[in-house]
Length: 131
Length: 131
DNA sequence: GTAATTGCAAATAATTTGCTGGGTG
DNA sequence: CACCCAGCAAATTATTTGCAATTAC
Image (cartoon, rainbow over all chains, first blue to last red; front, side):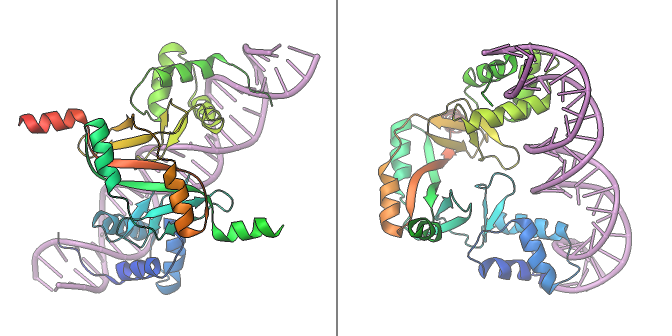
């Protein structure tokens, strides 16, 4: 089963790489429909799964209800804004030493980690300071 | 709406504090039925939501499909075993300085964070070393 | 007593899957 | 031209909610 480069897959990848938010499958579906009006939701879900399994994109489980997707495949940290609810990429280095630290402290093998920070994004900070 | 101490809530809390795994709502429901045979799934969900909102338990979103719950309300890190798929608590200190570090690097406000490590749990490590 | 909470069942939301025909390599 | 993948719709899974009856305080 060699992966094929379908128009649908390209459109989905394109949507994901041109957005800084971390959309849900449903939002991606609506965007994709603007380009391929009769694309089906099943196709969107199938491609999102394929793309995240191959590491091209990242599946996030920060949201309470639906999964969110990140066009950025390589590991990085996220901030969940407690005011507006949006999820942002943090442009800070991954602290690989945490893996070794956790492994030493506990005796398990650690291959990697994710961090999600909770707080206030820049936009909400400004809004709150203004009022 | 002052919270009441119902038998159902107590049983759910008891199940959660007597298990080291991080069960799904469905698993908790099945366990609770052994004590209160006609407890309903809606009640389980409702109580899990109340208990996690009040900080008595923690809602985890590590699993791909269903949510998982942790009887431990205070913040701690988790290890997701890439072999057996189970989620374990890590008994290591929370690195509060990461919040400050992220805040300084990015200019956002950070109130806290979660880390999930990926790797191999002790049991799976032993199994693999033996073979 | 009264209002929060239950059980039940139906509703909703998110995601997956079976099938058949079409398009990619 | 083989076979992966799309579209469609129905199925499944997870969770929420409305309502009348119950129960904790």
